[in-house]
Amino acid sequence: MKFKIFVATLMFIFLLGSLYPIIATGLWASPAEFRYDLKPGGTVTGEVTVKNIGNETVNVTVEKKRLLMDSIHLVYSDKGIANWITINGNTTFTLKPGESRKITFTVKAPSKINYSDAVGALVIRGLPVVENVTSGTQITHGVELVVPIRVGLPGPIIESLQLIDHKAPIILLSFIPGEFVYELKNNGTVQANMTGSIDIRGLTSHSIPIEGVVYPEDNYTLVERWAPGWTDLGLYKVDTTIKYGRFQAIKTINTTDTVVVIPVWLIILIIIGLVIWMLRRRGVEAPIKIKIERK
Image 1 (spheres, rainbow, N blue to C red):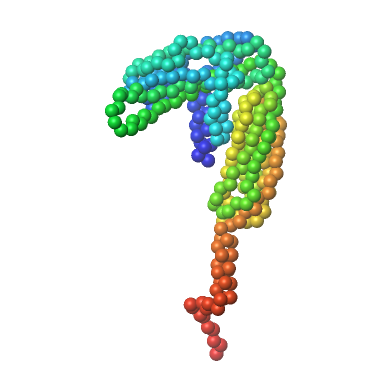
Image 2 (image 1 turned 120 degrees about the horizontal axis):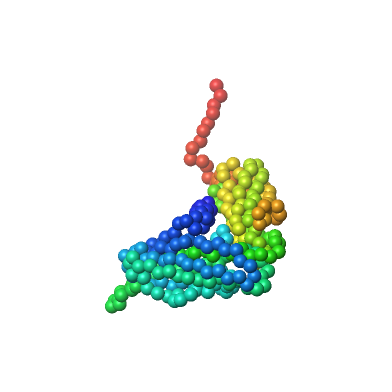
């Protein structure tokens, strides 16, 4: 749940990127996101302003990356759109408190493109300038800003999301969460916007919503968690439905699993029963006896 809140917050920042800057401790960047539509061989330029809003001089480095993000990972790659981006000028510089610098970049699409959606990023990192330390250990805290560069490209619209592998727990105990893991790959040419649910049915019923975005050529790890409650007991059928599409989620991926839920109170009763049985076999009498006499 905490991760979903984090992802939702990150997506909200992306949506407001053209209006508001992004801020991390010591560094500020604006705009927070770029969106372009390019034709094969097309070129576009952009500019982002980086400012030191802290009280220390900061060493700044700027890198171009392909941005990969799923429900548990934020990964940078040097492939794909990262090769289309060129950072103009120095990629390392120093900013004093209150000082700012403009970073310009160029995005040039290749002449032959086999997919229609791509997302890159400028990764801006800052480290405080460390003075000479004569003794002891010096610890510095750096900051990192990610400025996405989203590019839409003409080309065939092929929606194809493949479930490579998935894992589900076999046995679950009350209040101990189990993970349902789905490994997905986008084999199409456009982003796959995912929705759906994990429906868990047995003595009781539960539903876990699914959402996410997978870009062309990306692998995506979807992880959802469920913890049984006091009333959950026995065999549960787990039906997972993942719907996806570029604009409308009309294609579907389905999986079915079986999970055995063992409540904690049942384990406690079994342990108590075994202890009583062993004590009786050894002839140990209960410390308290209740005798009922009839008159």
